[in-house]
Picture 1 (cartoon, one colour):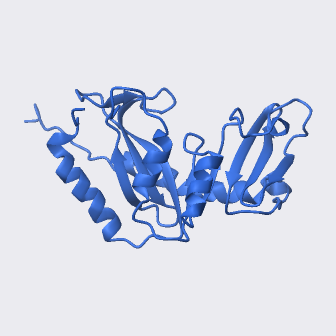
Picture 2 (cartoon, one colour):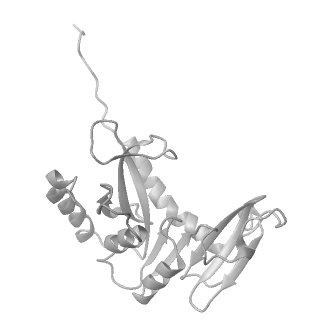
Picture 3 (cartoon, helix red, strand yellow):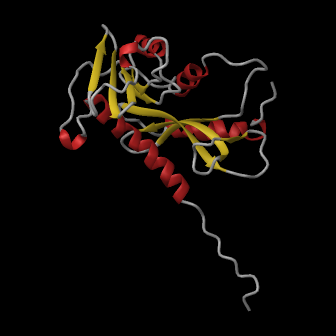
Length: 230
């Protein structure tokens, strides 16, 4: 298919390459999507209802969770094949972190997270921690939201290489996480709403992405007009 980014592909690839060749990342990175606000004419402009600006260019990015540095990125240009793509989430993450060595931890949102993919990364000696949709086939029924679980309670399930935890954020609303890095059922104190340690660490990792996204949107060039000022 036609490359919608062809006119600046060389510049984009070089910019991304300079980003990860000139910076040695910390052990934990976060993969997420970022929407750069834009309402002009663009063949790969997207609309995301959940974002504040809604219209713009979507970028897949890998952010260092300590320094908030964007270690690598890809511009989303729409479908790469005329037919629906399978395992897009797997392709995106693997292409973004392919230059990483072993021993790294990757934090993801539920779009990217699955048990199969977590085990793929584990075979490459990389761990994954991420929220996971409770309706996925591999998530047991006992971890799904219900009205009987106590507020701020947690349920843990373990396999030999992964852990699932379901935390009751609100009545009838659970947050489910999958991790191949954490294998303990520890929880925080009452000031942390008894959140499991894995969720507390997940929140810390996500703060790097949120901070980077905020800096991108705040650091805008201010233009002052002097027309008709004589």
